[in-house]
Image 1 (cartoon, one colour):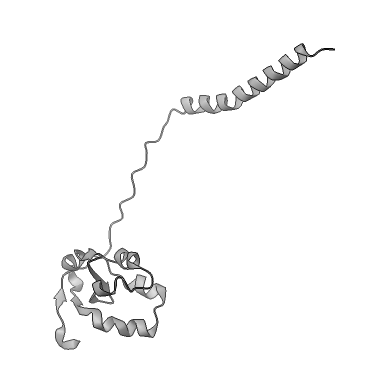
Image 2 (image 1 turned 180 degrees about the horizontal axis):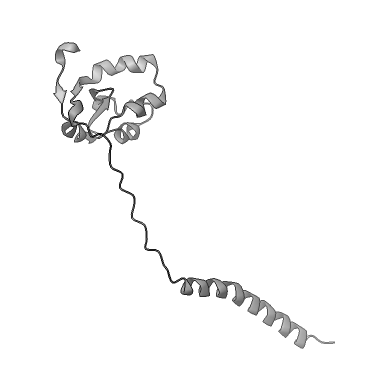
Length: 134
């Protein structure tokens, strides 16, 4: 393992993010887990979600067994150049719909949803009361 050390840039590893070509960065090492995609107990989605970033925390949080850690050796392909790994990924929040400052149309609809059934109920009672034979 020590003799095959190849240094990869983050941008290069980041591009290997598909089911048929999947590389992970765990603890500063690069692993080509493509052959393991079908056999991973958590499914390939778990591995794919860990691509394009340092997956060390994802790997450690699961609590992998000793045999899983030993298995990693056969997928090892090199080291990551730490200077190319971004310090922190930027979070881009999802687009929010514009806030409606004028709540008048929504307010009128809510009042009508409440009053129309009451009006129908009142009308039904009035018809029943006046048409009732005594």
